[in-house]
Length: 227
Length: 330
Image 1 (cartoon, chains in turn blue, purple):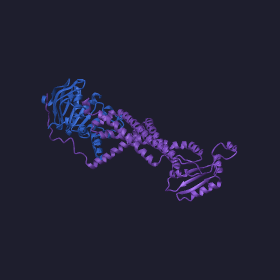
Image 2 (image 1 turned 90 degrees about the vertical axis):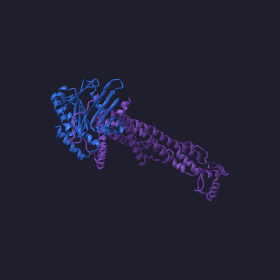
Image 3 (image 1 turned 180 degrees about the vertical axis):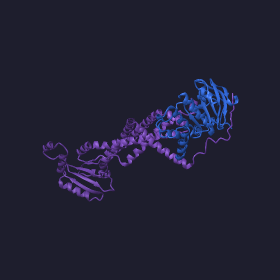
Image 4 (image 1 turned 30 degrees about the vertical axis):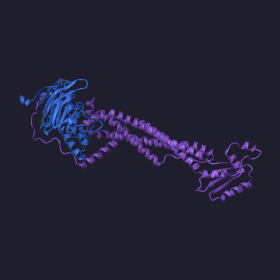
């Protein structure tokens, strides 16, 4: 069963702008893909439909087999705990330590303190920030802040992880390091969608690529199929 | 247009595990409440000036009804002596000499329905009048004492003072009988009005307190809108988002109530010398009484509840504005 599925999804904003037009694709457990396209192509809208910051005008989005149209207001938090989100601007809570930022999804989910401590340390080690738990985000570089953002997105072991231009503010070397981190996540069983217009990084990693243009899915490229 | 997924990964571990047990959830819930409780006070302390201003405005709104309550309470106490007084004064005709006065007094004392009779001679009345007024020089010029003898009659407990006054008016020796029933009825009406006024003012200013807290919390929410959006995307429930603001509102309510109670305690202390002088000029003594522990406790609870409610309304409004359902309707 696919972990994420878009069926003829369209999204039209109140002003009449069509951000997505009849988009359809699906992802299996542990798969990674990039969503590319020019600015305004609909990449961010596609991701926003997954974490239900918006709802489609037509069509249906399925996560873990559940049609998100059936998720009402009370069910939103439970759905969002299945979707990790990485932001371009990190969106860290600047008055809380690295540990507290990463622990936040587990705190929200009501996980016991000892379990939180264990999981946060493991995930911080994975993103190369072991030993920086007590630091405040302001004391970190932009790349390190993005690592904290990734750690926070994966610590609750989400079904799907979406990242909107996660390397947009980083220099090429840092961007490459961050992208490498994403490629390790599918091994945990998480579906990973990364929206990026950095074609150099996308080509280098040889992953599946969805190409959007004016809201339409114009290509679904799989390197392994091409090879 | 549809493209199906690619690689199956059947042997990969499940990304999500079973949720925490009930005990762990309860412990986490308690920790979250404690965290919200103390982090919200920490946020207030980060902006001491704004906190003092908000709590100050709320406190002033609370002080006014408290002062009204205090005023009515003290007036009730002051009038209580008068209201409890059962004495009826009988001013005798000027022709009544001392012997006739004493005979009448003794006749009344023999009545089982009368508890006591006090005789005030014209001379005693004049001496008392001299002490109570500044007209002692003018009184000295009088050739004779114009005051009549007075009997101060107290009925036994089974007899109403009003009934006794009617009986005493029938005496041929009585020139004028004074009993302040009408005055007492009017005073009772005024005190009742005062109590109702205090309630209405308290209600109106309570709404004011609610609006002040709501607006302050709304501003705090606006300042943290991005943080709220982030925790919502991480799966926070409305309760999780709302909780720190509820504690913030409750803290504002608590501080405002404490400030208001301090002011309400200082007011009687500040007014006491003036009130003492005023009451003393009437030949009486009276000490202003502040708010009791009961009123203070109710003030604390009501103020905290108003703070909590104001924050709940402000946070609820924000949460309703930020759901995808709301966006879809827009």
